[in-house]
Image 1 (tube, one colour):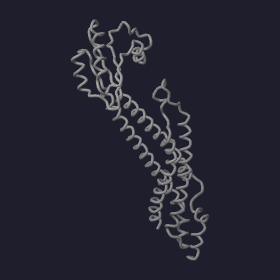
Image 2 (image 1 turned 120 degrees about the horizontal axis):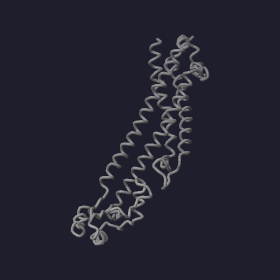
Image 3 (image 1 turned 45 degrees about the vertical axis):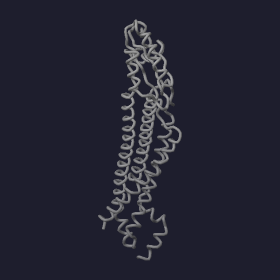
Image 4 (image 1 turned 120 degrees about the vertical axis):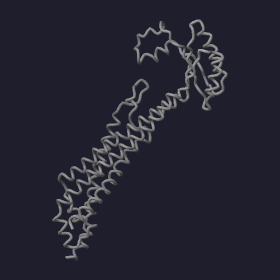
Length: 298
């Protein structure tokens, strides 16, 4: 019967009939790939959006500083004037101005509401300092302010910027970890489905061996079918996830953190990577499962 082998190698339709065209294994493969691809899109979205937001906040804090004037009421005006004089003559300072009462109210409004009687509160005067690209010597500026305006305290936002940079790196790491876990779950589910399909077709595999079919030929049928199912399911899930992301609210200056979620620019190409990645995972998982199961069916 070995003379039948060349025809089996040539006829892909015959090879494809080795794998059940439907059933729970096919449905499980497609459904798992679609669900994991959908989750992968959102993992990418959250990782990129939160990292982008933390980077933007870090950049904004890096380009600006604040001087706080805490002094007796009779000295506030004089110390504010002295601090502004020091700042305007400091190399690396592009601009410096004292915030108005309305601007201070706008800063406190998200926490205390619009009805806060800010005029009756002993709030310090805040001076916004904008830096040049080169920046300034923070320690030297602190010494000058201490001499000219003892009530002035410089905050260069270092204590705020460092946690944001750390958060951005950790969020990217978490996004990568989520993608690894999604890939692992996909591989595990496809391995189980491939093992079930191979075991269910044990009699067919034995007959093919009797007519001269090699294990590589039999395995390739399962590998091709499960790879195509993984790719098609992941494509559907990635498209669905991308559409869901596109329907999210756009970033707005008046909106909150959630309005900044989504892809921007070339980031929209990232979902296109998910289906080939899922296909590669399905290929490796099915090939491993086929070799292990065919050895047991010897």
